[in-house]
Length: 386
Image 1 (tube, rainbow, N blue to C red):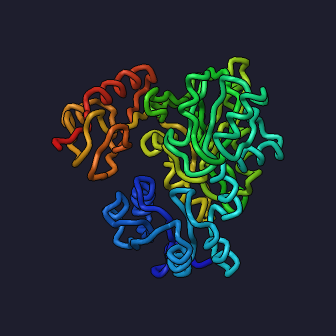
Image 2: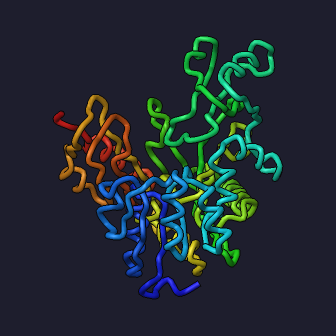
């Protein structure tokens, strides 16, 4: 492979949303241009890279045509056309993460079977072809309330997940092939971001703790370090490393974990890319997850994952009751908060609970950072006059 700093080197990214934007900003420190493929250059990454191709990353022809011009191909979203990636791989293209791993990860049913095969702890589960089959299993006693139903494909940011607690909840059943899991008695929801390069070097970031918005079922706050014992920290990092090595994956892997009331860790699911649970690393760690991803897919030495400061990340969501061109009400007051780093994604339209940006607060005291992060969330309202 030619050097990434060669003038004609091309690193292609499937996807041009906020993750692509932040990856391109990290690449800019090395004067490394990123080539992006997504539906519109008006998307967040289109504002920071001139090498933006409009196309559909789920279309075989678009992915193949784009990828054939690249030296290395990576992703910012897993729901891409892997048939084209397999063909490009057969033709000698370097692709990270490998399409074989993507095929497993983008199907939550296949993910669960993979963990079962590899003896990786995960919640007990069953697979069903439809919501009708789930109802039949309830009637026969094959499954019992309460349980969690997950669509096998295309779910993210809280979509494609439904908690069914009783008969009155059956109206929330999701259509299509799904995974049904026993409802875990959760003490904490944790995540470990781990990186691996083609040489086999692996590094994990400190475990983070997540707090979810109860309405949108997506992460609202992220705390680093997590409030867990050193022993649990070691176990969580070791489990994340076991998972990325089991997938033989190069790049970043976000490993989302349940810590149950018995003190045991279970893998919930993974994302084979930079991830919301690693956004704080931009401001609070020696190496951001976005630079680390570049290092990993280009087979460069991985950077230090040490934490420089405790931090809290808060997702900045579109306010309820507003949909249209985004207005950032309270921006000046938010920016006045000491230790706050604001990251706006540049999405022109807001709607309720849409991720419009995030803020990371760094402070020597995690508790003070939590107070400031909640202040930021309450101060900056993303609204519209439409």
